[in-house]
Image (tube, rainbow, N blue to C red; front, side, top):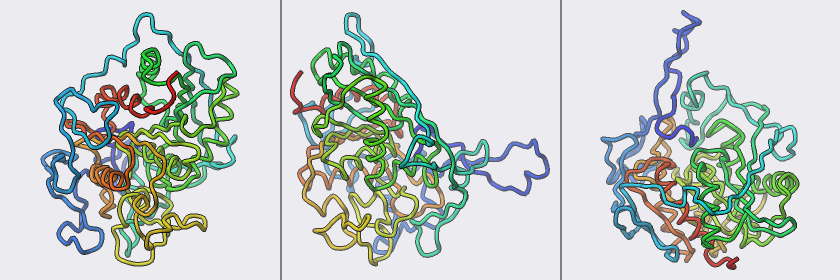
Length: 440
């Protein structure tokens, strides 16, 4: 979901008829659901669209999850304020306090990189032209999808009628490390949701880690999203799609402009290319590497949206990113996991999850989730595939089963894309992410 609305979205319009009585009346909005949606199946595990509430504390919104939940893989609990070692793989529990890492502060004597910014419009794009605009009620964020419905036979298929072609403009911010020599080929990291406050310390972090030789000197490319959030929006279209389209947008339309505008040369070596994202852009960061491991092999994500947010509905992959780790939660039936004529999971039976179905890909993945991360924020999606914490735990399980190099951090006392947790963990996460890359 949209990471700039961390705690609560402004909600939905409750009713329209009364609004006609006064043109000046303020529309009444309600908050996100963050609880079991009305009419959900929480009792029959064998029936379609089951929502498992095992071990959830509903006295908070979102509910607080116990990392020792029997549904979750085992994890190593660390002392408060302690982070996993940069050499460690596996599952870890941190918190409950989250002090910012010292690397988030600029330090005297440390050379500082520079930032180059430019804008990109859908008028300049081939892949995402035109863009998508969804008509929500002013002042009521995501109102049109909060008040919509799903098809009668499929709770995972949202009906969105308020989305139409439109124009987007986004900013691209390029960090160039100090002492960069023009013409030198550089490793780089692509960041989704560019401009987010979660990245406010990024330049200082990179300056310090590069100076300490904990990461190689690199280019960091923040790419703004296309606008709005979730189903029917440009942002959702880009980030929640389980395909290689967004990767092609970055490769063909963004990176050439980065080289031109910032005067840098970007490496073609996939081992020197990383992706980073927040929420839905965290899912997109993984998708970039999954569909194009020949381009990207290092992935970092906070509260990745590995749930059913893909829209438009795709009958070949009905659960969207949920199907990376788990089967579609609906009734049994044909589900071929096919994209543009290619079978995604050729070694597994139809409908099998993507990661367990193929040999491990050369992807290194660091990701985090908070104990109060998102839980069924949209009340119309009682589909059994919208628990962000459960999705992350299931990702950890399938990655371990396939032998991936990954580090998964469960943060106590943390919400969705929790800013204190980002400030605490991002330097160490970047160091883990770049392990194995040739030292400068």
